Length: 247
Image 1: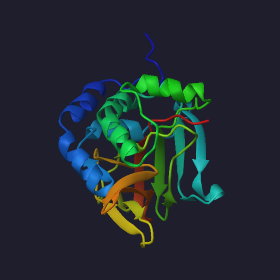
Image 2: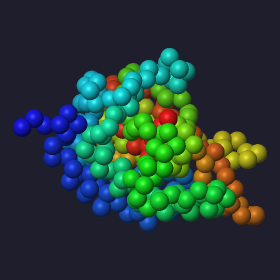
Image 3: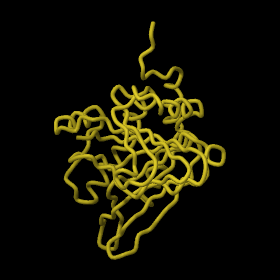
Image 4: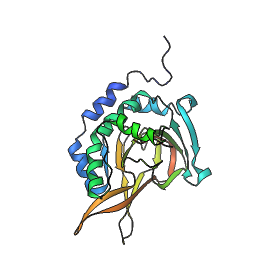
């Protein structure tokens, strides 16, 4: 019997076990303190290599973006088509379920009158009803000299305020440089930058657009952006798990 084109055998349980091993209380604390948190060893090295190997196979993707053509930086990425590859299809709702309490609490703190359903399928239905029907999980590829400018992944009216990036390559072996960078712009202050160290299989969860910060007069919004510094050598692959779909 032919295997479906998106099937990656024997990679489902590592994704589930990676979720179960995470200290989500610590993740929530880190997100509140700095707008990002590391999820260590979310995927096995085998799963990482299998996902990275999909990049040349266009049948898995709906579109390809060459960053330099749009002023986004250098490098390229491809958006997966539905159905998503098994590890990503499994991780997306599992991660959403863990992060939705933070998202709802953040919106309440920032005075944003939007609350998210507990189930990811219901949130996607909200997106699709508004015309946001195109899948947003993506696979990024960087070669020597490539980089990703600071940006936000919004895609439409409905935006889940957190997203996840999973490093599929091993720093020091597969590539040099190419650090994940996050910036925070507080009102009337200069931007704060943070470099998040990751190993193969690690993920970073981070704020997409805004996050609340507690001040002396209550919570206020700060603006977040993310990117990737210049790759000095080698090749780097990353999966981006965005929870809202695109128009």
